Length: 167
Image (cartoon, rainbow, N blue to C red; front, side, top):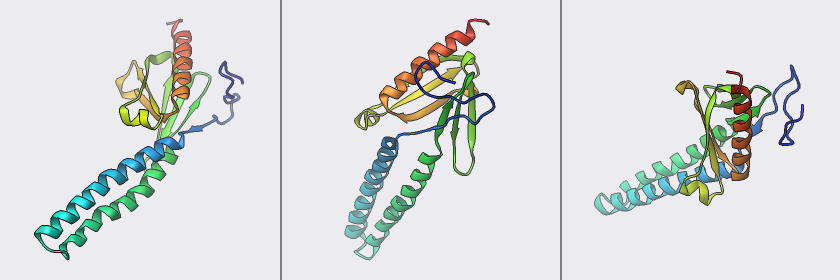
């Protein structure tokens, strides 16, 4: 089935076509990890070195170990995020240990927002926030390219208006 945006969606009974998040989100999250934990490591190393001696400054390697561990976990988390546009709803899937799949019917959408904070704008990213009639089903798709976020907002708004017209 062909949509108005030129993207393929699933054929009746077939698996949905999943779209992953762009690598810019992965770069942004890893950069934030390195900056914050790197600053903590340097500060801790200098502080312990001056106050307790150089042997104690070795404890500054703990934040460095957290950088390595966090690097891997951020990559796994980034790969777990995906979304699919179906004929009647939007699927959002995420999670590594605990998989979570959210189904948002187009007719239940009340508001679709595109947001982009200063760090996201620096990396050329935007997030799509979906608000529905039930607060528990509000959903977010983070780290999209701004053009894709706007396209998705416009498509979801159009489909939401078409589906809710009969209520």
